[in-house]
Image (tube, rainbow, N blue to C red):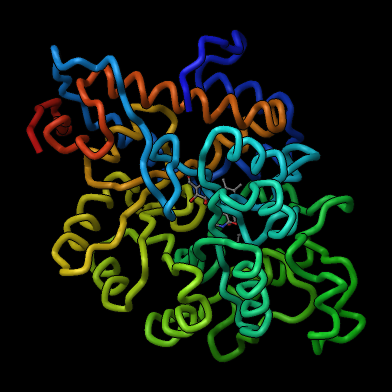
Amino acid sequence: MATSNAHDLDCLTIAELEKLAAERMDKQTRDYYNEGADHGSTLAENMSAYQKYRIRPRVLRDVSSVNTSVSIFDYTNSIPLGVAPTAMQGLAHPDGELATARACKNTGIVMGLSSFSTTSLEDVKGALGPGHPAALQLYLFEEREESKRLIQRAKKAGYKAVFLTVDTPVLGRRNLEIRNQFKLPKHLKVANFNRDEDAHHSADSKEDKKKPDEETGANQSRKRTQDSDSKRTPPKGPITFHTHAPNPTLVWERDIAWLKEICHPEMQVWVKGIATAEDALLACHHGVDGIVVSNHGGRQLNGALATIDALPEVVEAVRSQSKKIPVHVDGGIRHGTDVFKALALGADFVWVGRPVLWGLAYKGQEGVELCLKLLSDEVRLCMGLAGVTKVEDIGKEYLVKLDRSGFMSRL
Ligand SMILES: Cc1cc2nc3c(=O)[nH]c(=O)nc-3n(C[C@H](O)[C@H](O)[C@H](O)COP(=O)(O)O)c2cc1C
Ligand SMILES: CCCCC(=O)C(=O)O
């Protein structure tokens, strides 16, 4: 993406974008998008942990030409950053995921699509166009046939990968969502499921086919979580994110093998939600194609470590293996310098969630483009000022770490 001089003078930073978006969202949407689980300390730390690192800039290095692009899924992505999958974007703007897709296309940025999008995966891919890469985030349901159909549709539509979300065996406790009795407004639907085209595949009763009731779903999900193991039953009825996304039965052995069988060779299989070296090694052992270090934007296990703190051990574990797979990270990235720091700590690429939703809420497609342009300009500026002209040259020699007493050490 070329740096342009045209600025939106109301919005020069992601922090300003957050404020502008907050004024435009209704309370239910704002709370759903912005909150973290429980006290929100992991959400806050995802951001603040970046402040433990400072950049060591190098000078007199001819930075007249800075190349911010990287290759992902055989595509030249304009910056080492993608749009993380976030559910139900129709809540932010009537164009929802279509606006996000068009913005990704115009800025040369890969898009992650949530299984629980308010636009169908086919329509999103159509808006991206044939040459533009996308990854489908997957919640692997207990009803395997339903998931299999979704994967096959993604494959047909040309998605490059599925990102299996592994940090949601049960739903994190989101208090505002509970207090607001979150309900998907009637004019929106989870577009990949409960479709008429699916009806002939499904053994569900006619009664089960009625419009999903998210409030009932939330109660059902909480009840299932609270029930003892022996009483737990697979979800019934229409597919809603509350009832179907959390799947406590998933395990490495059976489920990764199953997924690879269905996806390969056309689509890669990634795991999203890794936070430890142990699980990174298991991911390598089970032959996944890539890892996203993530804690779901602090929306699942509050008290879990910040993703930038989990990243180094995951990178080290993956580097100890003979077959290297890419390691990406998301969570708390709000500035181009955060992107630089994540890459310096060994990430190959980063993904951003909420800032994109704020852009969408602010001005639809134009707002998402603004968000991506701000981050892109900041990455370019940071690289130039740090004396780096190529993304692959960003390494740990560009960072120092501050301890609690402010003592700085080289990495
Ligand atoms: C409103 C919202 C909805 C989300 N929906 C999903 C989802 O459907 N699937 C998923 O794997 N992650 C989901 N995430 C997590 C994001 O993919 C990503 O991990 C997180 O937003 C990164 O943190 P950030 O928002 O601080 O950038 C969601 C996050 C938010 C904020
Ligand atoms: C089970 C949650 C589905 C949507 C989501 O991932 C989120 O709200 O974070």
